[in-house]
Amino acid sequence: MTETQKLPDTRPLFHIALTQIGPLIDGVTVADLDRPTPCSEWTVRELLSHLIAVENRIMHIAGGGKPFEVPSVVEGIADAHWSDAWHSRIAPLEQSLADDALLGREWAHPAGAMPGFQAIAIYASELAVHAWDLARSLGRDAELNQNVAAAVVGPMTGALPPEPRGAEIGIPFGPVVPVADDAPPYARLVGWVGRDPEWTPAS
Image (tube, rainbow, N blue to C red; front, side, top):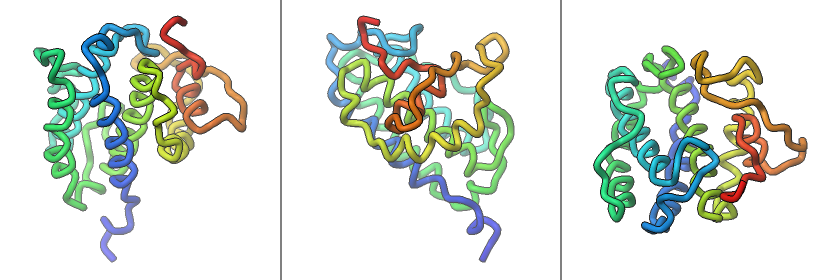
């Protein structure tokens, strides 16, 4: 058994987190684009621009690049083409993660240098949270895969301390929103990263 084979393969989890976003984006209408999201600084349009930028950034980092060489949002996507923009990146993104050696190779993740398997897991967590942001904005959170949240909430609570937090210190998460211990996995996940699980567009 090689050293790479001994490493956790976090790509299947990443794949599931990635694929649940596509149907949500497919259902976004032009009228939805200016809806608010649980990310108070973003509308649905701005959240979509960030999600597609995340696709770009993962491919860039997997290829050996540095994260801040790629913008955190994309510009110039027409209102009717968000779904096309998302799906056109899926195959090259998954191809960029195909090499098993990436699991043990050092990645320049925004949170710091780390092995690929860990960076991929963090990106799975980010996609899981943003899937909730989008679904909640559209009133479609019942479509989310609770198993994804269940798989990432433990590592997320271990990796992200409850404090300190704040964009000004480079930890862009709000205070933990307490939820019941037996709350659904998604409620526990988004509460830990500072989202209100009860958020609605009218909040």
